[in-house]
Length: 137
Image (cartoon, rainbow, N blue to C red; front, top):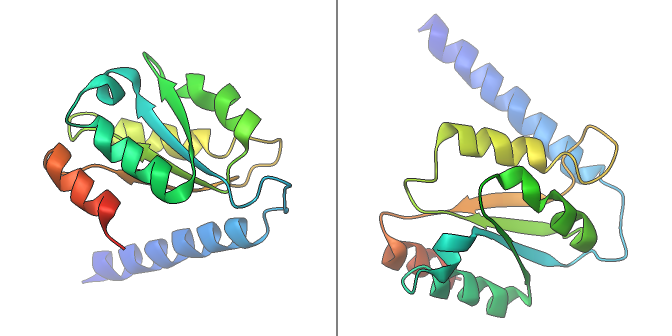
């Protein structure tokens, strides 16, 4: 029981940190922009490409791809400095390390230690499931 209470407190602390960092982020001229970040092979996959294209179309977004290291999208994200970023990945790519790396990456768009973009990871059981999520209102 004590472990559950500590976990809830930790979740509240993390959520509070995220909300504060998002609310205090300085306004930029490119606010309102949207980036879709996806692995090159995933984007080339005819089953997964519609997921990215759906988000690009819905949000008038810009695509940023990566090949061997997610950190290599930093320059592309800095150039766009989007307000929102969606990282699309297959279930196999959605590892604990990937989530950690994305979180760290989204804090490096500028020099302060706070999150610089409102971000999320979109995956699914398969591409069809991810596409349903991308199309949902």
